[in-house]
Length: 120
Image 1 (cartoon, helix red, strand yellow):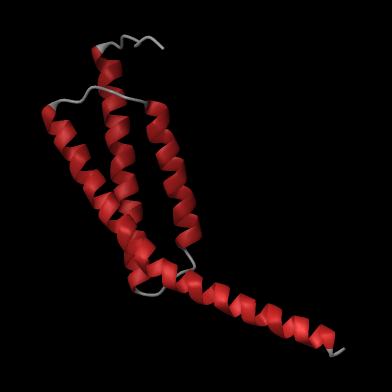
Image 2 (image 1 turned 120 degrees about the vertical axis):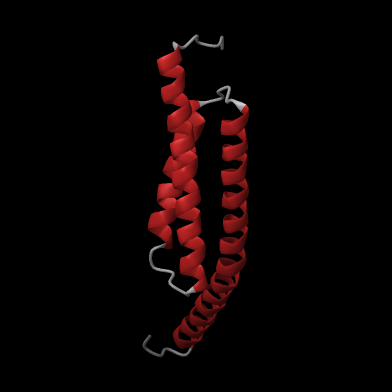
């Protein structure tokens, strides 16, 4: 697909939109990391959905040429996002493993109750 030439004001607006999306994604991931540290799991699905929307928006903006300062800022934001994402994953995985183990235990109990004709 050929590159579309943008006027200077249009290019500036695209740059600002891209940087805004990365800032918001970094903020969202930081909040997710803080919530997982506190063991507050209830808001994570909402924040994960917001993150997905932001990632799609970043993809929609596409590749744009940033100046050195903008590039450095975006790289810094990406590093923060990746660090927070790693922390969230490391904290959520044990919780998911525990939940899956409990679900398996409940399924086994239900299977035994059915086998012995007990109400569940």
